[in-house]
Length: 601
Image 1 (cartoon, helix red, strand yellow):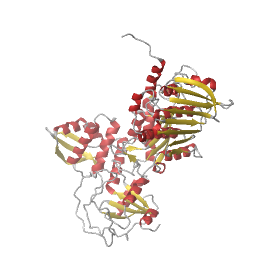
Image 2 (cartoon, one colour):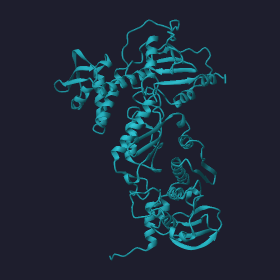
Image 3 (cartoon, one colour):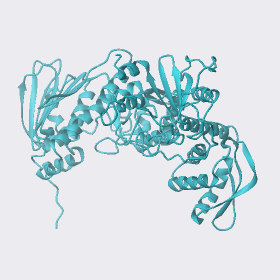
Image 4 (cartoon, rainbow, N blue to C red):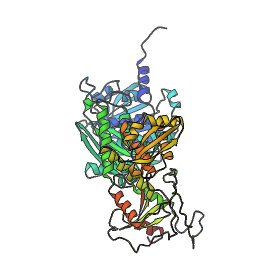
């Protein structure tokens, strides 16, 4: 078989396969062209998920009649002044979008520049130009794409339903809209307006947060912290959600580099590492981060879709993200997201139980061993421990001995009662706070252990009688392999024959603990992470497990002084709004919310 050159139309259709994957790809390329043209208003209209028709209109600088025919030729662009592909500052630069789209559809381009007397239009069908003619358009450019993939029917078969393709188009506009809060975007289809992103007045940081609230769930604006950090020539801004505002996927993680939406393992890995201390495995934070970097330190010419980038110094970028996020989350202190309280209120039924029966004279039995219910879908896996018996008392403690120094004006209020030996009830100046005593103390112990490690070592206690723990041989080997790291945390272990370990020292902060259960949990933790984490992150994971075993348990009765001490410690401890597993440590109910439950508002 002889080698031959492919026809130009076939070459364009092959190239289109890399650039035009679905209608959303068309929308992305055309919107990026509009942004590069200086547009302030961009309108997207489509039918049947963009398969039958997709129109993008902008008020940018437009294209002259002389350039219009050249614009649909491959690798013809006004965005590169030289052959330097390193210093790219525009979203587009390849000159492939219009010819690729025109080769697989029926495309019409109408455009007008300010100095021209009239607009001009050019049609392209299956890669063939059908003449240039005068047209009517007041300003900017309008690109109409009809019958997408009519020239390549095989590609058409792989498209999803109209609903799915519509969703992809809207998501694409959302991402580009988040990158440019100074541009107004609108999207509509057969059913009407599907998305409208207006320009919000005010400082850029305020208008950006409002734009993020328009795109992401509205709770994000109230439950996020600002990010602003610099390192050398790098600049990072944006907003990061509180750890208690999380999802089961990374769909709400939006990352931008020089105004370009990207999916990059360096950036996403930095986000994941920054939240390691705060979130349960399998849960993901909500973030919108904007990285500004010198063009020559970045390679955007990696993928035809321009959704991937390469950094000259990836370690520096990752380090900036981790340090900036951790600093912001630490500064947030004990804050927990308001969605926790909203979910709690939503699950309540005013005056009725789950069967709709009025709760008249209903009483709850005293249950000292009551276990806390799962929160956010996580099972309550906290082990029970035996506690000394105590004489029966009323479920609500008498407040006659309330210490006035614990004022309701504190952020977490003053302790009023303890319920089921599990929850501390505190009164604030405008509501109540319900604290999970185990989850809260677990976080406090964890932060103290991390601080001790940073300051040179954890204080340890020597066991008067070393304890021998029998375990599976594999578990023993796994723990012994990490014994130096465990020793840094105050846990000293040694081999004791086959299938057994002897524990000689434990972290003093943990007090008396179930060593067998602790070692078993540590082994499982190390088995899951293995070598996938950096040393510091592995130490923190082990710290989290140790803290869980050394915290105040459900079922332990606390004095009022102890409860108030717990509240004050939470207020002064970073990230105390959630435990080491990502569950909230407290729920705050405003007085107005409580009054609504009882029909007072």
